[in-house]
Amino acid sequence: MSRNAESTAFRSALEVIRAVEPRVADAIGAELTDQRESLKLIASENYASPATLLAMGNWFSDKYAEGTVGRRFYAGCQNVDTVEALAAEHARELFGAAHAYVQPHSGIDANLVAFWAVLADRVESPALKKAQVRQVNDLTEADWFALRRELGNQRMLGMSLDAGGHLTHGFRPNISGKMFDQRSYGTDPATGLIDYDRVAEAAREFKPLILVGGYSAYPRKVNFRILREIADSVGATFMVDMAHFAGLVAGKVFTGDFDPVPHAHIVTTTTHKSLRGPRGGMVLCQPELADQVDRGCPMVLGGPLPHVMAAKAVALAEARRPDFADYAQRIVDNAQALAEGLLRRGAKLVTGGTDNHLVLIDVSGYGLTGRQAEQALLDSGIVTNRNSVPQDPNGAWYTSGIRIGTPALTTRGLGTAEMDQTAELIHTVLTQTTAGANADGTPSKAKYTLDPALADKVARQATDLLAPHPLYPGIDLA
Ligand SMILES: *Cc1c(COP(=O)(O)O)cnc(C)c1O
Image (cartoon, rainbow, N blue to C red; front, side, top):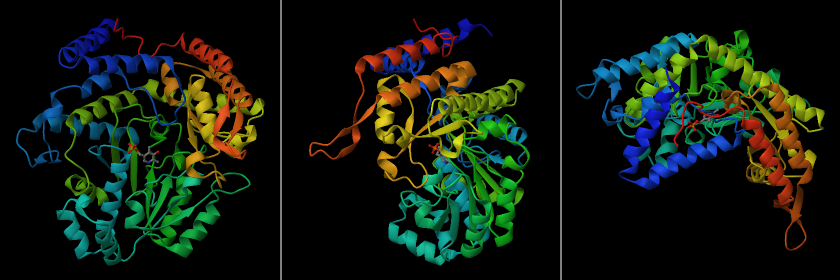
């Protein structure tokens, strides 16, 4: 396929949009420029292929398709059936899953589908039957607690937030924290690693209905075989949320005990993080949960997004190609090179390194909060996000950590030598940034000083690092 085709496609699309609302066309163009120019180290972001992006921008968006393949509540869904069935087939083949549900609009939505499926499968409740015919969004908080009581105060055991777990694993800001009585497992304070004996102990004491594995900010492999044994020993359903590392599972970097699919009853994921697909979610499950999972819409999901399912089918087809395994391995090689580069320069890393796509820097070693470090790096053209570290003294807002990840830069083609240079840039900025003080002289968790000339110099060096690896090399909008 000619590179010219990509340029023509996007140029023409912008021309059509510009004729209606030029400011939107300009913003789309400006976003490409911004993404091209920034050293993107946000662990949850990536760059989808032009084919994936184009599959989303069309008339599939016009179609209503509630229901499942071959069983729709709307007429004329034969083409939606084609793309939904393709996306599900690619997902099953790629991950070796018995069943795939590709309708969830995001990772959080996929988790909601999974929770309801497990509750409906495991708990006999008239209140739940009632909730299933209403939109869950209509329930008040009092309704939730009544429902939760009627469901028998079901329990969820998941990874604690500051150890790298996700809000949707039973924490109060998310509905999972209202639906379930939650308890969490953390990591060993000395090593930063999951202590499986402690997880087993917590499971024995707490007897959860659902044991959740998976994380957003844990830089290590997780042994899903052991977690499954723990779940079995207490009769829990074992769910894994692989939103962050699905690409490493797809690319066969995580196999055997570290591949969640053969071990979990149900697996949820996003499609836009390391998997490099469109913004969306997915549920994979064992056959016995399939019927309940397929009820996701309208139980907790709005109508399916056929254009996004088309893009999922394209991205999953890409992930089944041999070069995706090479990509996945390079993500990890790059993360390890970044970690080694930081360690060699004296940075403090949670768990002392990484064996996945992300690195968590404990920036207290630089005398900074996560908030100060995030902003100073951003001033220097380096995009990261602040994140709690285990037992974080600065809480979830200011934090003491910076999470960096390599899926996006690996997509651009940067390699281990450039990761070492990236480590140098990060270390330079963090050593040159000093924490500020409040008006009354107390230390500030937000203010900092960094010489603007140094920030500019680092930003130029970051641009130089990116220059040999253009983002979307086949797309020229000029
Ligand atoms: C990112 C993430 C999600 C949420 O995904 P969205 O698509 O933003 O809803 C859920 N779980 C985990 C573990 C994540 O990292």
